[in-house]
Image (cartoon, rainbow, N blue to C red):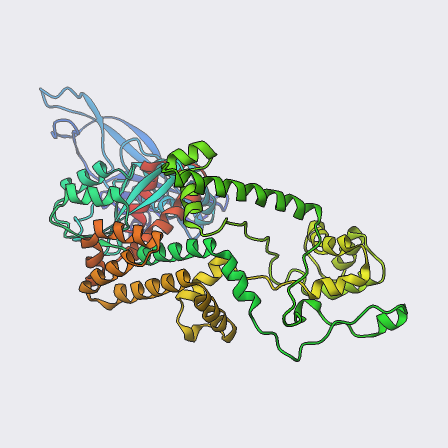
Length: 572
């Protein structure tokens, strides 16, 4: 048993308050350190009137949990006295002496242990913090951890000079809040309960001194900034502007999907590509000859690909496309009669956004083909073709075989892969049908990046594809030029270059870019500020990511007050 009585080292270790004296330290059962303390003062001040009292009424013991020492939990037993208040006008007859910095009134933990638990709760939350505490020689329930976080005082921050504002999802698709960030100090300053203009404007009125407000293109924040801080300079976020232009380009590519396919068909095939083997009547000769991958074989020059067999799935897709074509023709006809987008949508059963997409498309939009993940069937394709040529047409048997050689896909993947072969009705036509199939064009999202990236970052095949596409389709060529020029304007630092670009977009004849330019004109001051000023919403987006991490860490208990406490405290 370890004991210490009144030693200076024990007093410094277990009693940070100079007015408390350590009487005894002992380890009970090798697990818990018990420390006996008593107050060294001869008198105490009444908490009501402040009168010094020295008449002791009684004595009792308070039990306090303290920080662990070398992994051993520490329990303090403090001998506390009750005093009689001798002040004639004081309504308090008896009072217990206070322990000052050691512990608060009625507390069961020391102040330093409570502070440590609060910091752990701020960093980890309730569940994770409670799981960590036994390693630190302490214990508390998850609810206690969160209760300590809620009770902690909110940190106070000075009003930022450069303010970033963005929204965050409290419940995605339903309720949203607003995060405000000091872009100079790179710390969050406040969480607002919604993303309304009035709420943001009121906060700005309550915190005067904001000079620059960096935001996205949301009208609510623009209006709130105008109402709450009219003298502040509003800066639109450059990343969001470039993202908007990229989305315009991608929507245009969706409307010209046929041009994407034609550009892919025009790709020349290397003359050294192997020719497909023909199935001979002798099975041994067929199996002994090396088989090439038919997906890499060239299509004979001047010969259009033969139509793919009409499987049940393709028949359904063809019926849906025919219905889509009929709706497309109906939308065009109703628009020619002068009906609005909303009226057409009500008549046809579409949303106004879909009606707008149909009207902007030169031909009826088609659904993007289902794309198998790259590499899913690369290793097993040769095995499947060989087994199919041998007469095995059971997709379940083929799936079980390729599982043995490392295939991890589903049975449905194999069924889709071989259904075209089955529809031919003759195994000898498999290689021929596959060889004559057209190459699959890249998706609009892929082409969007190829059109906007510098030429040195593209492969030779991608550069040739972009050249063929822009030469064949004038709207895509014009849209690409507008997108590249807009990026140069944003990064150039010359605000005067925005006006000519807006004129060029308005005169381009592209409806989507004309609408985009009209929106930029309504917010032109903030766009020009984005070109001149170095500030952006990048730091704000990073704080939103941190907020999402804290929210998901709290297992559904992330109410706004608790989330605000943790968000502001962890950045202190």
